[in-house]
Length: 432
Image (cartoon, rainbow, N blue to C red; front, side, top):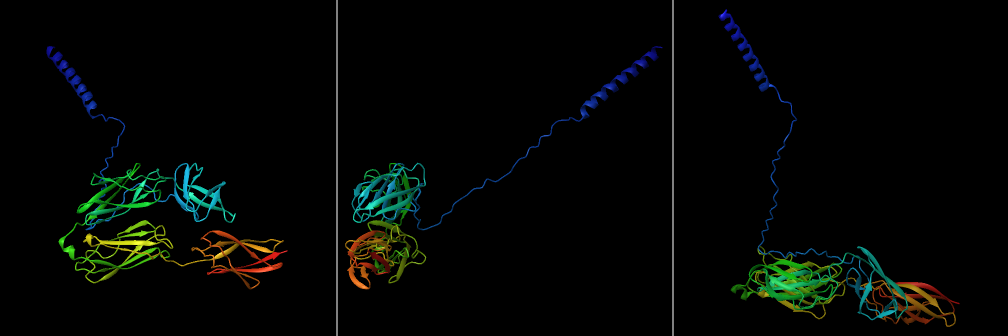
């Protein structure tokens, strides 16, 4: 009986253990239902841009955030001098005029309230020619103005470790001589030393060193910066000699051409040209012989530069040209000129804008416009009436301007012909 009890107890214990293990085993293998999370790992190589510049003579690089065009299209009669958010500064053309009953002489500065609230802004100015009494308009589109005393580098060069800087006042007010500070490699070198009127350029020199000079010009509102390379000096350059053979300025082709000759013993290359045209400095150091193809003894070469009408304008006077080789900058050559002008096709076209005849005196009055690009002298326009020569018009007319004059007519129909060097105009004027 005892054995039977023991056997039953063992069986119960075994059953309990098996049940427990089954429960335990079920917990371990039971799959766990949970949300699935997908993790994406992006393996990328960050792009890296590396600029490699290899040059023996670094080019000028002007660093400035200032836009270049303030007025485009600009005025045809007035000379644009600058503008800000309120005022427009102009220079009067060759005529004596009046604007809203205020008289301005030829070349006089004019300040106008432009009333622009946003840019670009179209502006039209109405003015009256005092001599003729004829009213005209002149229009332009003004872009967002610079700060008032913004500057930019127009060019830079180095000769014999002397750096030449050409700086333009891009603003709308005069920058005084002590308001521009010059730095070379972050070392203060002094003030610019010359006042610059709005939209005008000026030149100065500062000491440099062999190699690249990091030049900065600091105005009251911005900084213009450029690396300027100086090749230094060598004893062999004492035998270097350069000559300017010929200079030509074409307003039609917008090109400045300088023919030079190596008159010394040293091969020369890397030429930089500085020209003074109508008291504006033009600088260019592109093109021409290089270190691998230098200008040898006795050889001549032509340096041709793109020169826009901003500098090489029709009739512009070229008063001085200086050419300097980068490998022997002390061998520069400079020539002055008295009668060198930018050429172009001379046009003296006219049109008759208005005419009338006084009924009581039979005097005919003509208003003639110069549609060309050159001043027409008082004796260059001839007047004919009914094929009979009457005389010259007797007034000079600037390009784009109108001039009035009178001469005797005849009762009835007058067939008037006006003849200029470039064309003629024929009209019928009736005196009744």
